[in-house]
Length: 573
Ligand code: DGT
Ligand code: CA
Ligand code: CA
Image (cartoon, rainbow, N blue to C red; front, top):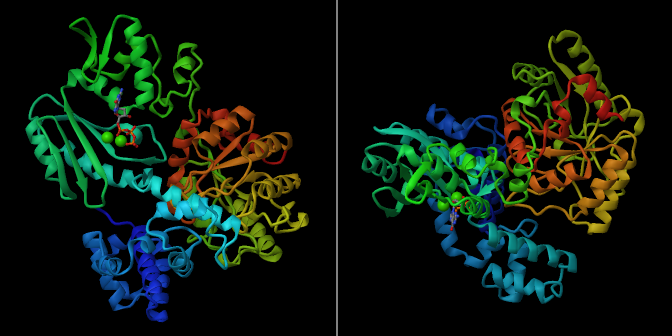
């Protein structure tokens, strides 16, 4: 099991929160918060550094004690000190510190004043208007706390798709090496590429040695608990809490099983109805006429049996895909190979880790035709946002770089902050020097729906507005989307020829799949962008593609599938 920097940072932040609740030494608290920031922002994986025997105490803000704690987390996935502290702080308080925007001090104030015993209690308190009666809390905050508490309670057990991948890939490798195994696939919501998954559903095709497969499964190094173990099916819980189901099937049934366990359940039921109407029986073992098997080795057998073309897993949600397939109107979904460039990238000029040239060369190495520099503007001061002078400097640097570099065009851009009144953070005189802009809200996330929507519409009125970055601002499992009327934003975008971003970062995926579909139906084009802060992040593009496909997008809906000349016309209509 590889522990990721984000997980280590989370542990240190939780430590800091709990220590703050306990009114521990402020220096100690600050040291953990600093360490969390350093680790989260570090280009290299702590796990790799520890493996390589590097001295972590050489990192800024990390002393010998913290270095030892990082090593413990890397080796065991846990930190005993955190468990000890948790045991000393009342459970509802531990839960409440996870509510974004609440923080240890305010959590404690609520806990004391309202005698909150659980997140459900907190939701009830919000509903009955008791939170706003406490000093320092308003009606709006109360509403947000209620929503966030509900969100945490309901998403508790779902993990982000990229995290699921980190868990699934080595486990699949492990099973592939077992004697007799032909194929291993991860089915379920993972294969449908849902943004979060509840559990992993593994499917193994083997014509013999099912017992060996089961033993290898329950004996996997990360297994914490075996919940069930039969001859062809088993369930385990891994050390990180994720549950994994496994099925071993014969190759003759593999396609039918893959179809069944890919789901969704609603899609399965709808397809099975079609099978019944044709006098067939469809289950995880195959397709049957009476007792005779008429297929099931491949998934295509299933679709053939009900006279449908193959439906990509991302569409199998019973949201109209079966009718579309019947009518031969399935979208020809966008693929990673269609992408010709990345339109949201940061460099060292603000909060990125790599230089403009390094980013440009990495994009060229991916086969891209273009890439852009979208560093922050001045309002985002924590990222050392650029003022007019620094942006113009970067524009000149890009001109020089383009004159030197072959095979890739660096586009001049910025991630321009949308100010509270809907104006853009830099004057038009500067913006007109850019090839396009990516515009985003970073502050004032809690405005009312009306205000937030108006703010975006006003920004879109600016003739230099090109792309709305991460349109809802949500962070999966961590921060609610800000309250906007997406339909109005889409209508306004279409009228003005503006583009919306599909931010491919696994924590964001924003717009989400449903948002993509709404945009397509509203006639609004999307840019799938990684928001890369380092070279490696350019590889996150595929997570954006996943959600775009779930949102029925075709290459034509996505601007960065265009050649540069065509793209320019869309960026500056
Ligand atoms: P998750 O794990 O909550 O992210 O979502 P899924 O879709 O992976 O759901 P899961 O793990 O409960 O089941 C995996 C697949 O197995 C599901 O997508 C469809 C199939 N399945 C499960 N239960 C049923 C059922 O009662 N009827 C049918 N037709 N299919 C089922
Ligand atoms: Ca599942
Ligand atoms: Ca399951």
